[in-house]
Image (cartoon, rainbow, N blue to C red; front, side):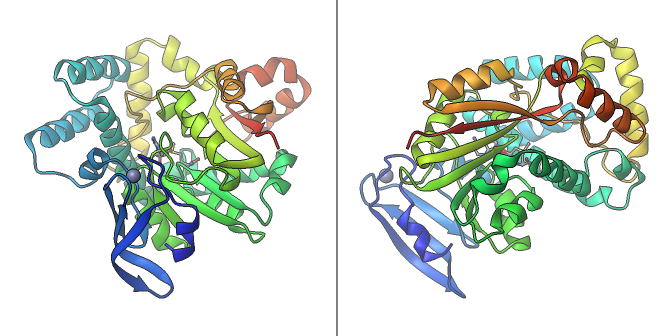
Length: 369
Ligand SMILES: C[S@@+](CC[C@H](N)C(=O)[O-])C[C@H]1O[C@@H](n2cnc3c(N)ncnc32)[C@H](O)[C@@H]1O
Ligand SMILES: [Zn+2]
C-alpha cells in the first residue's frame, strides 16, 4: 500500500481515523508489512505483502487454514459437495447442518468464498490448456464480458476518468482492473478473501485492501465511483452493503452494480429437468473437463440471486437516485456461434421479450450532489 492510502483509510469497526502504523517494512515506495493499530478501539490489522487486511478479528483468523477439527470437517464437507450431483439438496442440507452445529454463519460464508476462490483459480489455470475452455468461463470470456458491457453502456466510459474508484469484490478479474486503472484513475481493489488480492497484486501493480463490503474501511466521501461486479448475490443483507457504498461515495458519485438475472433461461434446465437428466449433462460436461479436478458449476450454499426489482428498490432505499437498469448481456459468454448470433438478432429486435430474460444487468445509481 502507498502511504497516501492512509488519507482515506479508517478502522472498519469504529470508523476512526486514528490509525497508527507499527513495525512497518517498506518495498520500493509501498508499505509491505507491519500492523495498523486503531488508537480509538485498540484493534490491530495486519499488512500482508503490501495489502492492509482491515477485517474483523474472526475473519482474520479464518483466512489461514487453521488445524482445527471444525475446519477439517468443513473442508471435507465442501469436498463432498463438490462431487455431489444434487446441488439443490446439498445446499439445503448444508445450511441445516451448519445451523444445527451452531456454526457461525458469517465465518461459514467466508470459508465458502475462500474455498471457491481456490477452486476458480485452479480451474482457470487448467482451462488454459483444456478443450473445455472453448465453452466454459475462461479468462478470455471474462474479457469479452467486460468488452461488451463497456462498449454498450455509455455512462461507464466517462464516469471514472481521472477519478478515485473503488472496485469491490474484485475476484480475479484482471481485465476490469486494467480498464479502471486507465485514464489516470486511482483504483482501490477490495475483496474479503486475502488470497484473491495476493494473486491480483502479484499480476497487477495496484492498490488492494482486504475488507468486507458490509464494513468498508474508508472514510465517508472518498470515491467518485464504486464498481461492484457480481458481488451482491454473495451478500445476505443488501442494505448494509449499499449503505456502505453510499457512505464512501463523494456527493454526485456513481455506483455500477453488475448482477445476474434470476430469470435468465440459462437457469431453466436446472429448474425443470429431472435430476437424472441433470446428472447426465453434468457428467458430459465434466468429461470435457478432463485434466482438471472437475470442480465446475459450484456456488456457495449462501449465494442468492436477487430479482432486479429488489436490487432497484434496495438502491433507492439506500438513498441513490437516477437508478436505472440496463441489459449488460443477453446470454453468457459460453453460448457459441451460431446460437449467439441468433440470440443477438432476436434480442435486438424484440427487446420487450428478451430484456426481461437477459443474463446480466448493470444497475446504475447516483448520490446527490
Ligand atoms: C463472483 S466473484 C466476482 C469477481 C469479479 N468482480 C467479477 O466480476 O468477475 C465475487 C467476489 O466477491 C467476493 N466477496 C464475497 N463476499 C464479499 C464481501 N462480503 N465483501 C467483499 N467481497 C466479497 C468474493 O471473494 C469474490 O471474489
Ligand atoms: Zn477502531
